[in-house]
Image: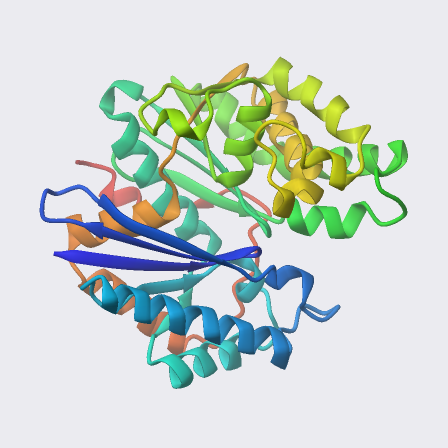
Length: 341
């Protein structure tokens, strides 16, 4: 069976198509549309008509591409930029009406759970007790567990793009005071999560997401052309040096560094500060870079649990009237009872 997943994030809309008959998501085709939604939302987070139209066009193109590749209708979801929008329900309804694709927003905790599943399947059981950090444009997800699914999962308002807009406002590169303020905020938000991670003492710590992959490359990890099976790690001391390098440059110059892409250059410093702070307060010296993340997690849940779980997820998203706030403290995972193989 050929399955497709659409992920609408702060910077891009990505489509991943995979064959799933072998019991693992084997990549067939990937494509992305650079929308930078977070740069086009209104001050209160509302997604305006122009930004919504661009999102609709990208999702429609993704659906057409999936069809051209003989894949099923996309499992489509949007992350923090849509999840936090006051007009979230209108956005989702418009996308469905215009494209025929039922997109949902996943709670931050669920994003963390799915990313953990992807990391667990990639790393295998030899990884032992596993902690996973995934930084996106709008939020940072952290999860820990010993089994298939995490024992706890949390989403924090520490996305690289969000923090760049909130803290680095006066000049480019930012001032020392702005950097210190961001670091203090990150430490405060991570305090309870870090306490739990230190208590659990994971055998393996994994970082995943494009931001972490690019930072790892800057810190000396192998380039993407070496393939996904090339071992990659990121050391905390190297990330600390990278912060000094990034902080001394305007965004346009950061884009010339190894691994840092132009679309993510502006937010790379904030991402590095959050990553380094998280590793420091969690007493992590080295993290493994995992190429699988939330999209692979969605595919794996589809393979392992069938399509009913996604139908329930999208139904819950469509009928829920409660706003889904970003979590500020450790939340008990709904998947605790599913932590077995």
